[in-house]
Image (tube, rainbow, N blue to C red; front, side, top):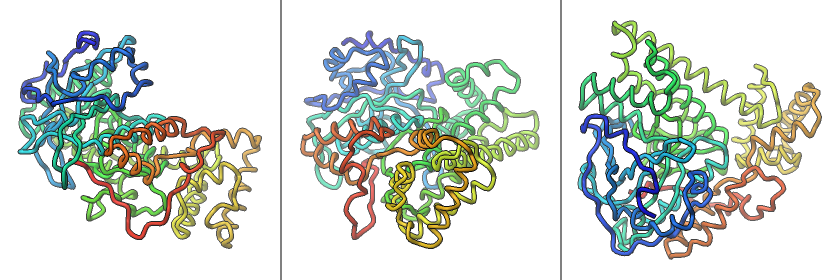
Length: 480
């Protein structure tokens, strides 16, 4: 497949060169395609067979006329830093046959102008994790980037010892971050912030183009998208692990699945990331960090929101307050749906809060608790024999009866909001370990399961289990 078959464009390059670098590619010795997302290829209108022949492009061995690396900044664990694509290369903006535009980016393709002394490479294990988690998110119905391919490089890289190198190809509606706006404000001028905002509006909210309050509405939409995204994460027990502003995308999609994981045992303070030593990005903190990150975006847009600083701050504060309400509505409505309630009432929040308390105190499995409720298998609940557990079940059944809906409608609703299976950490680790040995069968087997998470008729067997007890906390690593 020639690069022309991709129909690449690069509208991002219409911004000032401040925003990107067009450095050379760094070819690898013997690239081999080991994972190809054929369903995604079909969605993009790409030919599966010819795509398999395009290994050189997917390995970063070929420079396209549209390739570049992006500059951006970010608050990393609360500390502001000037950053950029230290190991990523944008092949270009692929325009699919249906007219939709997607960024196609390589991760692990070699050093860039923003590598800060790093080798710009990636190991096969973390790239397999990103492939698995992004596909699981897509199947769960949560906005996300998607992985198109993993190519091994045939070259070792050093990450606490030698590892097999790999390049991930991922597809997203864009890679514009809160950190991109921070970079424009810090390294550029107001004109650069305006140019970036206009470009982002054209990419994601073109109906706002030319409106006098377009920047206010744009900020409001980014806030809404992020609030709903994070509510969705909470509702499936997902912990991102590195919610820095450079990992907060204005598209409302989840990206950069490094030290992320899904909870087994429910506890609000759960942290998996080995680098999150203070628990800044713990499960319970994710909604608050989302608001904090969006406040950093609002700061960069203040000069665009009103003629005076005071008026701009008032607008920004109102929109940030809307984040809280949007998040709460999405989260508590989602929780109500998870226990079979079609229309949420205020008192239902107390009912779901009590359920979460019981789950925490009994160290219940997050996903399997809601799965058992969906299946009507209340005897399997960790709190089934406690007096307060029995009281909750009675209150829950009473509330369900008040709806006056057929059981099949309630069950259908619960099945739509409670996955039967998630990427269990021990299965993800097993797939990664096998992939590091060159065996990708466990990855394919796990993908087959994760692509149908709401299929309650399937026999998922061992994939439903939270795994054997651990004698130490499970940790994930970013793999840089």
